[in-house]
Amino acid sequence: MQLREATIDDIPELCGLLNYLFEQEEEFKPNTEIQSEGLRKIISNSDVGVIIIAIDSNKVIGMVNILYTVSTALGSRVAILEDMVVSPKARGKGMGSMLMKYSLDVAKQNGCKRITLLTDFDNDGAHRFYQQHGFICSSMVAFRKSI
Image (cartoon, rainbow, N blue to C red):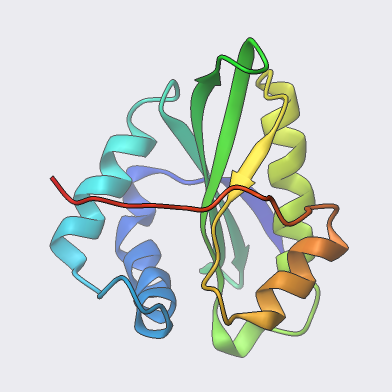
């Protein structure tokens, strides 16, 4: 098993993983064309973020997306963790923990002082996973508006 940054060539497999994720999320629906464009924008600009992938037997079996911004509260770079997903066949084998640890290291190496993430309100399994990796539930509430 290998962990590395995604390249443009990985986009078709990444879209397959995103389909698994978006099929279980309430707010999002799979759309390969839109997903490909978003992935391309991230992969092509390291100032925007980085996508970390897990590869086993030459197949992408997991991914996590780290996006960068700046916090005025901290006066430094921070990250948003998005799109963490492991292929259903590869789940339960520690792959998610490996991806998480690697991603936290990448964020620290890139000067991030905080990582924020969102999960579905009722995804207790994800909540436990993130808490096991040191994340705490924030008192902040997420609001969205499509424009």
